[in-house]
Image (cartoon, rainbow, N blue to C red; front, side, top):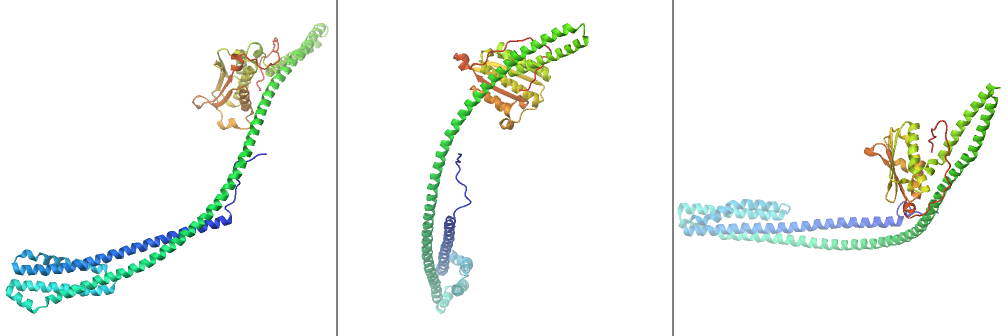
Length: 488
């Protein structure tokens, strides 16, 4: 039974959770609009307050300009110095700018603009009067000014200007107070609305948190159950993997033993029978050669077929269990196999042997030989190579093998394909002996390189005894063609 660590896939949130989430989102959006509206009102109130302050300052400044102009004119009359006329000239040059700014600030209040128009009339009438008085003084002297002052109503003009200034300032203050009261009421309403919205949002968030918390703990419980099931599954997988590894090791050992047994039976029994047949054929052929040459010729052909059968038997025996591996060692077997491979496939196959590799035990030697055999078979079938190098060497703790070619190379993804039985078989042989095997691209990304390492420390260094294999086959003389069948 298999379990998955992934949580169960759902099509979406439950309906009630979706409603709660949407409600929370709507409340937060409303709160955002409310805050934006409150900020707009606050900004408007600040602008109104600033505008009122500017209007009051401008009106007061106009009043100061007129008063300074009148005082400067009197000083000029008393001293006769042109220096005293500076405030009068300043008032004449700045009055227009001040009234233009006031007209812009009071553009939205018609009553204030009427009062401003009256103030504008009074101020300019006062300035005209002072300019006329100045001209009269310059033409007639102080006596004429005294007469004009006695007949004019200059004090009344200044009182009217002051009164108009007071009216403007008072109306601005009243307008500011009214707008402030309106803003205060709206602000209170906005604060109350914001508190209500926040309270609703907190309530909805608390509900949503409760739902999420409940879902989270349910998920944690399910996850723990899945983890427990997966732990049990992993333990079972480890156990089964170990069992399969032992079984694979046993099958390889049994396979090699069966091949050796079959090779021995073919060598002993079939070889003895074929030899007996050959002796009988020779005897009969010699007996009838003089009397029946035609029969002797037929017996010679049969003997030739028998010789070919013996050679076929020898090749089958060598493929099942190479005799050189048992009698002359791993180095000689690999060297001989590479030479025969080059002859059959017409490839330049070079074997390089470094160190004492014959120290390997029977199981290690047959594993290395089978890896070489399978690698060369793959090269012959797929690589389209011209040169092959088999490098077998003795290293510290084991035997290293490298089979490289200059062919078309192998796709890295093909190594892991389930149908790559040859590559998987080579890797399994190496792993079962505690070694490793890697298939990669060759030098400069040309061709394929098979690298393997088989540790020998348990056999060669510690003196342990490798698993027993059947006794080696005795060597026999060979006749005819020595080519081999290179199928693995």
